[in-house]
Length: 285
Image 1 (tube, rainbow, N blue to C red):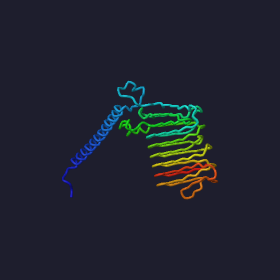
Image 2 (cartoon, one colour):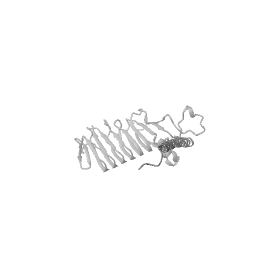
Image 3 (cartoon, rainbow, N blue to C red):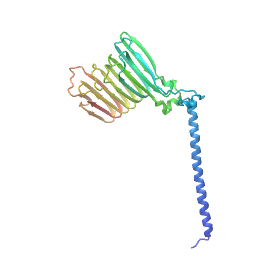
Image 4 (cartoon, rainbow, N blue to C red):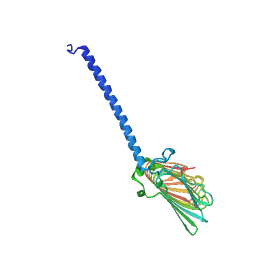
């Protein structure tokens, strides 16, 4: 059965449909571009009003307050004749690197990079007899603005800390969220406490030959890597939740891991590990 619509009219209908479809697609694309531009402008305005625009030569005379810090803040803590140190570090969120290598007359050096001025740490120092106690704390969250706490830039908080290698030190590290990397092989440890709420933790005792120490490591959510000198007399007790445990160079007895040739008759490096969720890697090298 043939159609009653003439061929010419059919062609006109198809052309009109294609034209209308193309016009609609063009309008959709233009609307998407417009929405993207408006979103960018709004986001930029929020950054400007909140004061989290980077300080550059282009915005030196910006009417908005500047809180960005482009160069690290460097702090040194003198030894002041102390024969031991007590180092207490509390970082809310960010990246922490802790190692030895501070000058002989310094107990501690800290290089801090933060995108927001209010995230610069507070330092307190007290000397009791021959021990120098230093507390390095990120300001309380109540001091920060809501936008700073929830912005990705709030994670741009990096602490690089060096400690004295010669005097015995007690180290207490608390990190709410972030990556912690501790290279402690050159230190002379009395004790070590590490608490990391969320994030990966790497602790390397390297070629440690200081005095015997006691350590407690608590990792909430994240992977933990622990490296011990193979020739050390080390015992590790592991309480583990969810995740795998891999080891190299250790002798395992249930939850206890010891270095080869371990003997309780000699001074012992005692380490207690508590892990919530994440893998644990034990290496003796």
